[in-house]
Length: 518
Image (cartoon, rainbow, N blue to C red):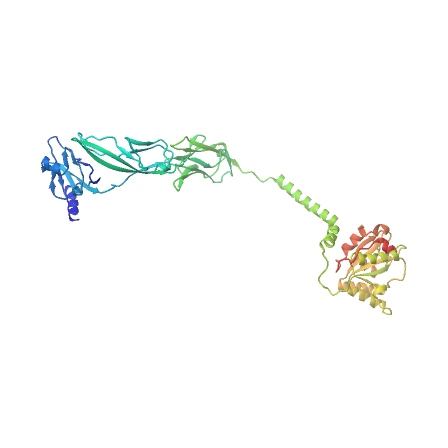
């Protein structure tokens, strides 16, 4: 360690900081070349700095004994040993400058010279040369491949190197000198990397002939982006084949930015778009050293104004859709409501304290036509047995001896809907009872449904008591059309059921008109 520090101090003192490192395998040849140049009369002086021995003072016999040869600018060690390891210096006899060496002698391998190639490419391995005196020649090296095979070749060539070609290749070179052969071994490590994917620079946006919509007098920025491979690739803008300025003081200019070293953006900036800008074609151009240049052309166009014709058409379509929906609803609302009740099973579930769905009662028709007793019986039977309504009937559910007025009002109180049926002139409701019925309607908001005949029609003012007229105006109306209304699928039954609430329970059984007629 002390000797090495003195060696470094000596280097600094002479003003030379270059130190050459040499490594050699034991028992192999190594040559140190002094790089100092002088006149023909100047002698090269060699010194072993480790042992402080001046080699140029040795006699030829002593040099041979130590396996050393001093030949001009060269110090050749024919058979390197551990004793030769150390620091050496050389210089001209006038000591104007000196060169320095550090020699290391190894047993075994002396390290590897790296060589990297890419798969499927040409690859060449050369045996590292050694500078030797002019009168010392060398033979072609013998190569030992990773599989152990040997072959004498100046170089190893792979026309298309493969991954399995990688490994350590050892070259053996012989140096004939004064009738003797001296050897030197070098190891070359070949590393084969996967084939490099060739990258092509290209413009990624905008698209060719893309149109950008603008407003006159408004600013606009258009970005041209490119994937590039080399830092000296260039991306720029042209306006009608003329270069766009990069100076930001111009009304139209561009600037460039880099991202991650392989993405470039050239931004075309319009401070205020003019009508003249709309007449030009703008070109984003990419120039790359490794390939042909590429470009894309873009143009500017005014933004489209809103079309009032389209707005009007849309408005008409919306209105038509609303009208059609309203018409369809008006036409099919009865069928839809009944479908939900009959098919889906929408029946009333919440309890409202009522005992009956319907109170079926008669009112006197001032015309000669009403609903006869047979039709009334059929009406009651279909409501109860076919459609599942619970009825309160005056002649069935009122106890004998009970006051008529109290019995009627009790049925109204216990029913969800009152259905008034016209009859031919028969004993009928008195005016006082009608007034009480109207009062009950107003107080309890009981639902009213009037059944009229085609000849009865609407109840006209003056032809009926005032209380009945008020009830008629408050209720819904369904027209009985005789035999055409008998079928449960007729329009009469659909409209009547539509105005009635859903029954508490589904119908118990199906009945036929034949059964009713019996």
